[in-house]
Amino acid sequence: MTRSPLLIVIASVALVLAAGAIVLQFVLPSKGDGASAADVNALKTQVAAIKTGGAGLKVAFVNADTAFTVFTNAVNDLRQHATDKRQEITNLTNSYSAGTVNKDQYQKQLTQLNAELLDAQMAVDMGTLDRMIASSAFSDLKSSLEQLRNQADPVVTAIKNLVSMAKGGAIDATEFQTRYTSAQTAFTQVDALVTQAATAKIQQAAKKIAIQKGYDLVVPVKNVVVYYNPDTVTDITEFVKAEIANYL
Image 1 (cartoon, rainbow, N blue to C red):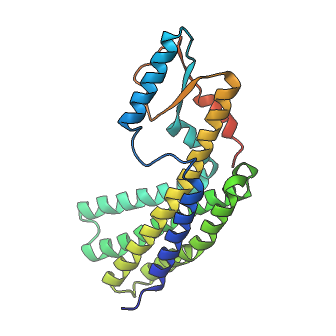
Image 2: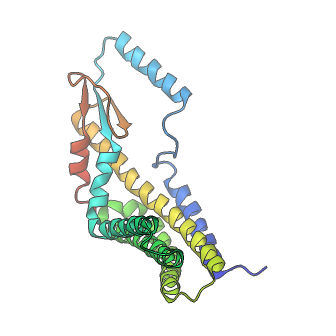
Image 3: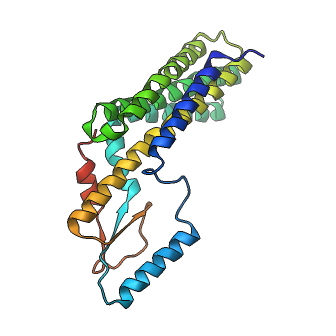
C-alpha cells in the first residue's frame, strides 16, 4: 500500500529524533517520574557516609516546572493563540450542549478548530525552536535542533493544509481524521524534543549555580514542595530562572 506523504514526513522526523537522542542522552532527564530504587539507595548511602564523617551537607532544590516558565513566557504571544483556540472549542461544546448549534454545524466547526489548535501548538514549538537555534546558549545542541527544524517544516505545511481543508469542508471525514492523527503524532514527537532541550538547559543552569554557591547536592522537584527546612535546604529556583532568563 502506498504511504501518504505525511507518514513519510513523520518517519523522517522520527529519524531526526532518534539521532538527537544519541546526542542528548547524556544530558537529558528520563521520561520517568523519578530515580530508580537503586539510585535512591545509593544516594542514601552517600548521604549517610557524609553525616557519619561529620561533614556538613549543603543541599538545595530547583522547581523544574517553575523554571520552565522562563521558556514558555518567551513565546507567550504564540501560547496565547493556542489558549484562545482551546477556549473557542469549549465555547462551541457549550453551545452544542445548550442546543444553539446543531450537530452538523458542531462537527464542522469542531473539525476546523481542532486543526487550528494543532497549528497554533506547532507554532509555539517552532517559535521556541527558532529562538533556541539563534541563541548562543544552545550552541551545543544547535546542529541537532537545526536538523529537527528542517524535518519539521513539512509537518508545519501539512498542518496548515489541514486547516485549509477543514475550512473548505471538501475533505472526507475519515481521510481528515487519518491525516490529523498523523500530524498530531508528528507534533508530539517534535514537542518532546523541544521540551527536552529546554530541560537540559535548566539542568545545566542548576549545576552552574550549585558550583558557584558550593552546594553538595541539588535535587529537582515538581510543582509544590510539601515541606523543607530552610535552615538546611535552599530553594535555588529563582537563581536558576535568572541564569536562563536570556537564553531565548
